[in-house]
Structures are given as structure tokens and as C-alpha cells.
Image 1: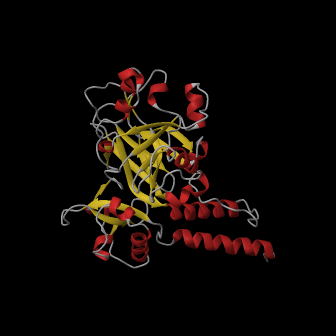
Image 2: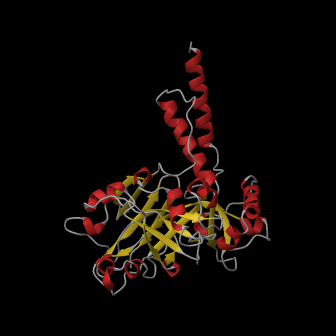
Image 3: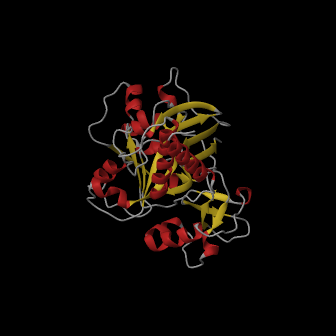
Length: 339
């Protein structure tokens, strides 16, 4: 017979397994198009790589763009939660075209050298303050769109990044309050023209970072509370696997313990964990909001781990025909062909 401690462990493990096998109830907001619908629509992705629930069919009063949805705040989110709890038809992924989860934001804020292992790769000191630059919103494309090699550059590089999407307006936001201003997270590819970033235009970073198609995003905006729930599930499972007692342990509601990787033509070129971030989401929001007002839909790209092409020996850059996959654990994968 199992002793009482093992019985509790076995019962809890069964509950975690049962939860893991149930249909996804995580809030994965998407923008999409189909041939039979006019213009973009809002939807819910039914799990990573799954089909789409049409939110605008569920409630015709909902806006059809993510920017307007986020501006409505809790009112719109409550409708999406009701849709998630209802057994609704799911459009197969093959019938939809995924757009970037956010298009035309007020700003795209980027952070340089924000992974400790990436700083080590460059043989530079870890920054004492966040290094901030930007992309224009015109660089944003969808999760499966093509990356266009500009004729002006011969050194186009890859950078997988965790992106934060702002859901609530704020200025001079305290780090302790920052997560209340976050709508969720998505996968970003900070495509970079290294010749323009590092040698041209006075070594200002902007032009090298913001060519058209240089910011693929998606596939979904995974809401903040969903990330916390996913982390809790993973944490429980790992604890049960090692048969440790879970009493007294508290899980922070943040995304700073997720595997992050980039593959070029199937080969892993970047592999790290978001726990390597120097400045976490809360610190970045507090820092940036000192200077600018953050609005719903604003995007913060939080930096990239080591393995980029420019620091390889010899350097390696993207070429026509390459396929880049950027993946973050529990958030999703974006796949972009280089043309």
C-alpha cells in the first residue's frame, strides 16, 4: 500500500496530468483574416498551433482590431473570457491568415544587451541602466509573413525576443505596479541590419533595426494571467516529478523563466532562458515610463540571448531562401521565410 504522503503525491500528480490534457483555456488573443470575412477580425487561438475562435462572431459589438480591444480594457476582456468558456466553433488554422497580434501601435520600444549571456558573448559589461532604442511600427509583420532582404544591406541578422504588450495607459509607473499595465506577451523577431546598426549613419541603431518587415510578431497575445497559470502548472509538475513538498512556496506572476530559442533552417542558433534578462518586465516599464507615456498596444521588445550571427566566427547573415523560427516556451512559434 502507498503511505499517506505518496498517496497525496500520486493524487496531485493525477490532477496536474488531468489539467494538462484538458482543452486549452488560456487566453491567446489573435488578429486574423479569412477569405469569407471582410477585413481583420479578433479571435482566440485554441492552444499553440490550434485553430481560431472568431470573437467578432461571438459578440458583434467587439472591435475588430487589437488596439481598440485593448483600449476597452476589462470590458472587452470579460467578453473574451465568456467566449473562452463557451463551446464555440473553431476555424481550422488552414483557413485563416494570422496577422501580427498588434498592428500600428503608438510605439515599439526595444532594449539592447538585456541578457547576461548575450553581454558575455560580446565581451562587454552588463549595463547598469536599460539601453533603449526603437523600431517604427511599419516594420511589424505577421507571424508567418516573409522577411524581405533590403538591397541596402548585406548583413541582416536574427534576434528572438520576448515582447511585452501594454494594456493600460501610464506614466511614471512604479515597478511594483507595472504588471497591472501589461496586457500580455508575444514572440518577436528583432531583425537587424548590422552594417547600418554598427557602422553606417553615425552608428545610430534606428535605421538598421526598422526596415520594412523587420519586426515579425505573434502568433498570439498571451494574456498576463495565462502566463502565470502556465508557469504554475509547469512548476507543480516539476515539483511532483522530484517528489518535493510544495507547501510554503510562492510563484511570482511573471514570465521570467521560459525557454527561448531561434532556429535558422532547422539549426538551433540561439538557446537560453528569459531568466537571463538583466532588467525584467517591471523594471523596463518603470524605466521607459519615466520618459514617455505608455499606451494600450505599445510593444516592448525585451532583448535577445546569445547566438546572433554577427558575433559568430566568421559572422553569418541571413540569405534568400532561409527560414527563421523564433520560439518561446508556452507562448508559441513564429516562422518567417527570407526573400
